[in-house]
Length: 275
Ligand code: MF3
Ligand code: CO
Ligand code: CO
Image (tube, rainbow, N blue to C red; front, side, top):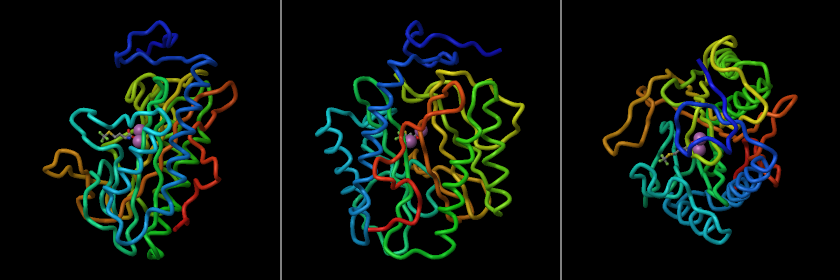
C-alpha cells in the first residue's frame, strides 16, 4: 500500500510515505536546483586533461559557499567530499582524489546543493579532451534515456512507466541498465520515497501525483549491467570494466507532466560539450 502526505505535515525522515509539495516548495526547489545547474555549467572549462578531480570538488565546495549553499554529500553517511566524480567504468559515487584526468576519459560529476533547506540534485557527463566514438555514443544514449524517462512523468501514470521507457531505449541501443542504484524522492530530504527504478514495466510502482518531487538518474553501461562496490565502500564499478555513463535531473510532477528543475541555464545539458 502506498500513502501520500502533504509535505508540510510529514516528519522529516524517510518513512516510506510519498510527500506532495505545494507551490512554495516548488519555488524553493527551483532555486536550489538552478544553483546546482549553474555550478554544473561552470565546470565545463575546468574538466580537461591534467586536472585532478579534487580540484573539481574544491570548485563545487567554493561555489556552494559563495552562494549560501551546502553540498549535501559533505558528511553524508561518512562521505567527505562535495561531489561525486565517476570516471569511465566507475558507475557512480566515485570519490574525488588527486589523480589527474586523462585525455579520452569521460567523467560524471554529481552535485547536490542544499539551499534554504531544499536539495537540488543533478549530474552530467564531461568529456576530457577528445573522446572515442563509442564513449560519445554512450553519452548520447544515456542522456536520451534520461529524457525519455522524464517524458513518461505525468499524474496518473505509475513510476514504472519511467523505468520502462529508459530500459526499452537503452536495450534497443544494445546498452544495459544498472539495477543496483535508483532515482529517489528529494526535497527537504536528500533521499526520500519513492525509489525511481530505471527498468521495469509501466504497470509497476506507485502512481505519480501532482506535487511529487524526485530524481531520475539512469546509469547505462556499454557492457553488462552488473556492478561491484570497491573496498572504499563507495566507488561502484562495472564488473566487466565496461564504460558506464549517467545523467540526472530533479523533476516535480505538475498537472500535465513535469517541470525539470535542474535544466541548464546555459543550455548545456546535452552531451558533446568539451572545454
Ligand atoms: N548525488 C547522489 C545521488 O544522485 C548521491 C551521492 S551520495 C554520496 O543520489 F554520499 F555518495 F555522495
Ligand atoms: Co540523486
Ligand atoms: Co546526484
